[in-house]
Image 1 (cartoon, rainbow, N blue to C red):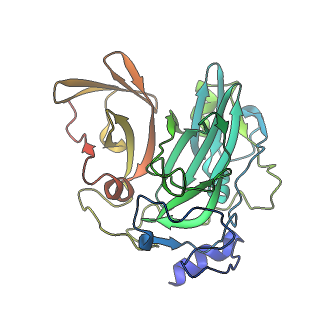
Image 2 (cartoon, rainbow, N blue to C red):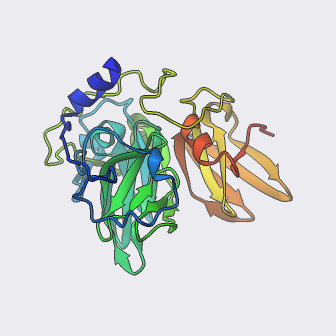
Length: 308
């Protein structure tokens, strides 16, 4: 409990909020009568609605002007000929960046509790949606809400789980997990998210300390799969509505092939950038801690733990 308090206080987001008789903040206009999950498993994470502020108008600078450490980790996103880098030391304080690259509307999301770094196409149903932080968690994972219906979306599933959009899935966009120094080498003309966010945060301080390496999980979850360390970072992709995952550290070669049923899955690692190719088609991927992926995909997920 002490660690949890120490975690929340430095975030500067400890806003109190009143809850309705159903247990949800009455400031939401969400249709709580529609859901695909057990609402009893949704818990308040501490900060209330928008207590962790998403960034809606991100600013970028040339990567040569970056003022963070070279070993800073973050996600790299490429759209056509433009490359942008979103460092975790900024994402950890905001969790969602609503961005636009040319005609692509993107939500870059990060749940530090699950190590899940996922980018989504935020244009669907003919409209562009902004995503915000609800302050609620499901299986310790970020529940986002959209700006139009305020439906709650599971970041891990990429799916609306409460509200009018319940059951709708978001399109995933491919990201790579890299250090700043590697981005500098491979993409010297890349842009990097600026620390000039409009918010007063200490972007040189990482408030989750050694959370990534400990076995401790701050919030209740329904089960633990002990196949890997709970915080093991997995690379995840989806094919034929099945979620596949494999541990990053197990990928030592620059290419391997996995046979799933009668399908050959070719996986390459180009200096940290992983590509999935199936029957000539490339599939986007993202990153997530083992415990989180295992909870959300325990029934149908496939672990690729035999490298050939």
